Image (cartoon, rainbow, N blue to C red):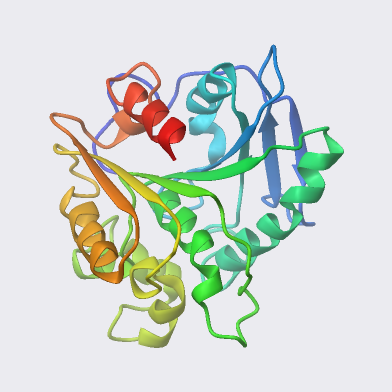
Length: 268
């Protein structure tokens, strides 16, 4: 994923989730749930992890952030999904998994007594891409198996790969977009048209983009480009640039990014 995080958010331990539920038969088709310790939650945060869609990065590194969000009063769902390098990951399995997960989410949360009034998607890095894409599925063609009329109440992208096309053109993550979709944007443009949130505007959903100016893994220019396109499409979008912040600080509740994330969730 590029530069080593500082401090140790990628390896820092966190308390285990309150529940882990399956949304499919594969070992990666699971979701961790965390609930606020002392009060019911009005808002469900779906936290989608990053790792350039690669199998060697799983949801475990989001534990500190998910735990902090739960302690801040949010119900938190952290889905796992098949990734490049695992059986069935990449195109189309990764997108199949996210779609099936969101279809099952209501049943899973209700089974654990959660009846949140609002749902906000939060995604980091490649998870930012998936969160934006999940919110854009109502823009997919009528024949797509991933199409739905469901929309979240808001999306918060943390140093997100908001444009798959730029992820490919800029060769981010060692040609990660090409590995995800089975080719570059010039090789399989029809796949990028279905999988790239930048190609599915307008979302019609409020979006906040948090991005560090010193991000060497996903340059802040990515969020700047997406924000410009979203504004042209008439979407409500807000870009918050964090001076001196690198890539992993966005998921560290001990970093200067944490109050900005809380503000984004509270104002969404």
